[in-house]
Length: 348
Length: 245
Image (cartoon, rainbow over all chains, first blue to last red; front, side):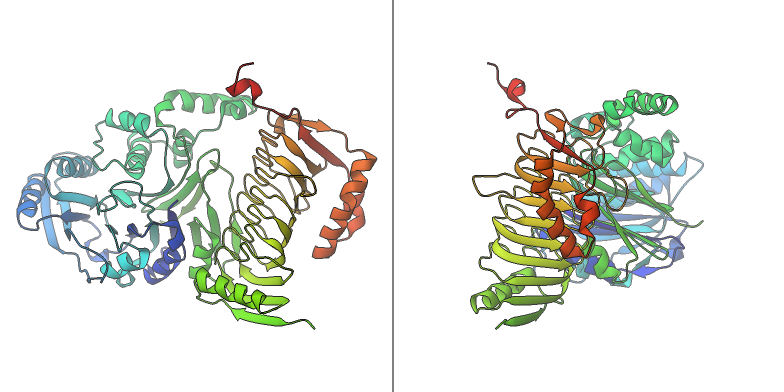
């Protein structure tokens, strides 16, 4: 199952985390109480030019020294500190959440290539350290295991103390390794964050495809692969977001046959070029970067997606009540068609 | 004398809420008004008798599941699968509903004034006198009447274009009646179009009049409209797919 929620304010007005906590907790039934997570854009204005690296350390001494050394090879650590946390009665904490504000050295390589490689290297090689988010002015707050319900995870990090203009949230129905804190969504790689409700049956094909481009999948979740797919198609291949989603959730061949000729040619080309990127199985995905939030479902519509609009805010959720919990006066509620992307863009 | 009970569901979890509704029915309430409903699931599930439950707000998933007898009226939208495996009674939804409306329904009536999501009427069934009815005022989405095994499913398309495609995928019983023409390309393999006969029309007319009455619509244009009737092409649509004879 899983429950997902996303909200963007198109004028970048800030929202604190309390409404998002409330919205996600309306969908408690969709999770197994073993993991939840939040990601917010715009929370670190004082370090807006640094990449904020959120890291889970098993051992804050030994593993941290290895991460410090790796980062210092590739840039400057402007500041680092433990992420403030507040013990919750039922939540067992197996690691120390830490954050770095890091400036990569642009003379060595393009910034985002450095960040991508650092994340892959630390997650694959440094024992006891997992980078869970790595973007500018963005941070992922998540936890797993027993006691990992949406409210407890929110209270553990006190997410109401953070203010962002774009939030995604995820309530996990754990199907594997519920105890691991890095596994619940959101998954993040620099600009992009992803939450998913579902399970792609094409996971193996999609994973082999992104690994062919140098991405290393270390936590084996769908959202990890989806994040890398989007980063590959949008950042590295320069595809427009609409085309990228067309590649990930393409129309059926029968539907393509019925399109006007130019559209047929485009859609055939995307399916041929990006066949191994196409995702099948039941899923609803909401992805975000600093400028937009986008939601889409699988073509067979095996998972729910409800969209709400109110003033400058666009909401996407698994259930209407999550939206109404945060925005009782919501102006419109719609249920978009399968595979059709819903995009909200923030003003520059 | 009618006995009325009012429950404020604000901030309440669905378990105590449904316990209160059950208790009210046991105590002989004839009308139960539930205010400030926000996504509470399973309202009216497995409930028997003849009470009327008025839900003010957005009803959560699996509304009236296994229900046998009562009437549930929702002034708002409903989430997924209202009328799931419902046995008898009636559900009236003044707003729209999510995916899998009337999932596996085996009797009674579900009326939705607005739209429904994907897979409306999936695996509705019938047996002797048990014949479920689902009527949708707005549009239905794709895979309408998927694996349908019985009952009557009507879509009126009163608010614009009917979006459903792959209609009657795997249908092997029952009938789907859609107002207006339906292009062959919208039918799934295993479904076929037939003419709506006068006999069919007089059979569905009382259903349409009841629907119009519940939502304050003029019944005559609905009764006299042009309809497309969709039925199974065979009783075993996948006979050649999974077995060899």
